[in-house]
Length: 466
Ligand code: NAD
Image 1: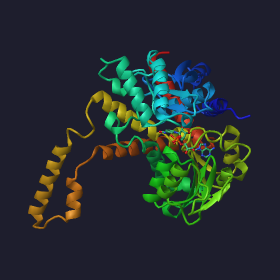
Image 2: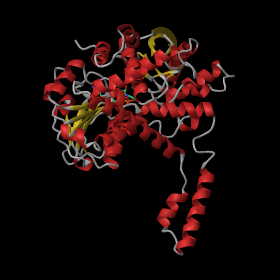
Image 3: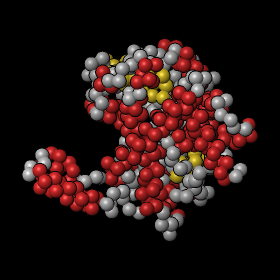
């Protein structure tokens, strides 16, 4: 049987063979530092319901530690530990100065009304806050499956009530709504980061040659699994900005397929309204959505949950490139088969780092207490205006209006967020690529990514003198 935590550790062990790390330090890096289990009661509907949740801290080589909170009936302590480990590796690769953490609450959000969910979330948050498992300087959650900016706003408010004098309290959690100390661009960030990674891959002819793809992204087809936060945003950006042809969307209760392309906005609206793609008018409904993963396409993007490609179906996958937007979608054995089939996989710990990158920006903004670009925007506009005036005077010609407007519009906070994210994702990609091509024996991008991550974590432990 596939075990997410065991598989994650197997990936680390595989990469460790290429590093010169000692066995004891390697063991220190792999092991999860702590997992707190909490069971708490909430009085709802005239009786007391007991809920169970976890918060794992994988590595404190840097603090605060960082990682989302998943609201899902299937979550458990092992899953949360695996996800916490992925957070450590992910932060290391894209140079986010955080350790790894993760949380899970065993609940189906759809079973509860909004006010009930708020009560449950606040009680869970209280339990974690009083143990510093939610704290601006120690441990900072964010949204994950089943949670969103709404839950993050409740958690931040609960923290404020418990610690009213903490001036940095808003930084106790990220992914908050922009009007509640959040950051424009956080909600889209993971999907946006996946877009930047896909673009970067298509700018590397040596990698493209390995999978027999050319650099023209606009002629490529794509199938996406999961049309939640991450799947929706990446589909929207890759189809609208890069003209990738989205031919399939797979959801837990059926999927849709259309070779001529699927309109993401239309499909998302339909799924949100009907909670299913059944009878969707603009594509063929496929009841067994797992079949969609096997359909021919250039790019396959799992963006739902773990272990969806295993030894049971990996042999039938026919995509040329898989980009892991979800955490842990490919099992260890599944990965071995894909490697053998020479299907290129960009691993989760690189591909979906965009969320934590922008969470880092949000955290920085919260402790700086000022929005990005606030101080320099007008000054920059003034300088650009002076430059345009000088050019116009010297040439005797006026600058075309569209360029002038673009110059003078100034840089908004969202532009800075996207630019910072792009830079972090590209740097991460190039660091992994460097490790990948530096040693012929490193057979896949995932191993290279783990190698980059563990060497950085080892360096951090080394400098704090373990
Ligand atoms: P979400 O809850 O918004 O969306 C998940 C989607 O997947 C939902 O539409 C759900 O119906 C669908 N789904 C569930 N099981 C499925 C199945 N078996 N087949 C097909 N579809 C299925 O969650 P999300 O925030 O988009 O997260 C998705 C994945 O991305 C998770 O693995 C998460 O850990 C990872 N991730 C999320 C973020 C983030 O910022 N939200 C950051 C990094 C990684």
